[in-house]
Length: 232
Image (cartoon, rainbow, N blue to C red; front, top):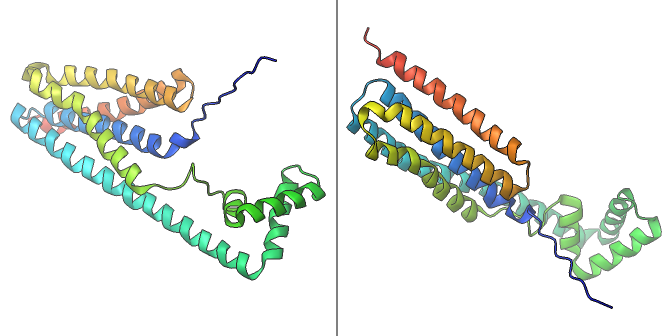
């Protein structure tokens, strides 16, 4: 018999860092791009636009990293607290916890006798791990990782900031608004497509949801900058 290999490449393990990376890159591109457009549209000199863009980059990257770290750390604290509760219950009421796990498997479609045997074997192997996974929904794959999320978010924000900042350095002042706008639109589409492909979503849907929201944000900010910079 010829042996066949069946390898499945699931994307759930990427969920934590991918979410932070897509959020960071999108936020960097849209927020700094929109800020640059707003300041440039207000007739500010190129030096002022550059200072605003670089300041937004540094502040945004640090804020995104810190925000992700705090947010995901809170999630990790909740997971640890839930695991501690479950550990105490396993020590105090092991039989009840066994029945609870078996009922979960019955609700998922197993016969009661089989569910009881599965619960017995899994608890003998790793009781806390079985309850964490099947009762609480905590697994190693999806566990909160604060440092990973913080680095992914901060670095991806910096990557998202790069296109509008490079445009400021390379483009004449008179062309800054249309060029920055075009560059940001292009990279919004690229970011949406990459995020959709990496996450396994439909390419068109993933691209459009990033592209349209980012475009709307930049249009509004450009309009605000134009109005505020207009002579009174």
